[in-house]
Amino acid sequence: MWIYEKTLQYPVKIRKPDPATAKLIVTQLGGPDGELGASMRYLNQRYSMPYREVTGMLTDIGTEELAHLEMIGAIVAQLTRNLSIEEIKKSGFDAYFADHTTGVYPVAASGVPFDMKYIGVKGDAIADLNEDLAAEQKARVTYDNLIRLIDDPDVCDPIRYLREREVVHYQRFAEPKHTT
Image 1 (cartoon, rainbow, N blue to C red):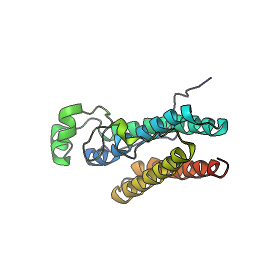
Image 2: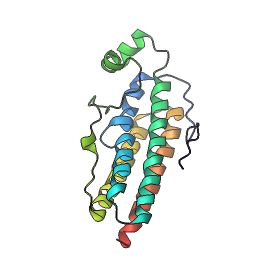
Image 3: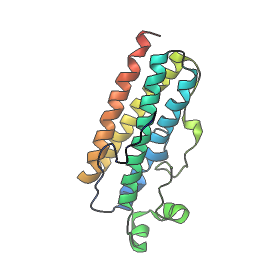
């Protein structure tokens, strides 16, 4: 049985809205190395995984990625709350606003909407695990880049947490390659 706890995996408490930062953070929602792609990748790979332990790990990490998606959504929502039209225009958030207002929508920082082409599911244990290792490293690099670009400690704190989880997931995906 799956149990959803109605709290974020890690707290998100952003005091100052900042639509320019939201434009960057949203890439971890629906960008090519974001949390939506990660969750879909792992939750779909598990069906063809021939090793029960690895299937369980894919399920565990895939559902955790959904929790990360929820955190990124909370960050974007808090960064875009109560914005004036002037703030939206000045920050360059106007193109996103025109399509989505301040709704949380899975899109890359470049403006490209999420597409399932971002996920890799081959049906081969070795190929899929190598895809997962690469995906976790690309997500870590994106979080590193966001930390370099963002000054707000309220935003960087949960981003650092998410970055560390990418490292843990990478380590977990490296374990079964020795046994497959």
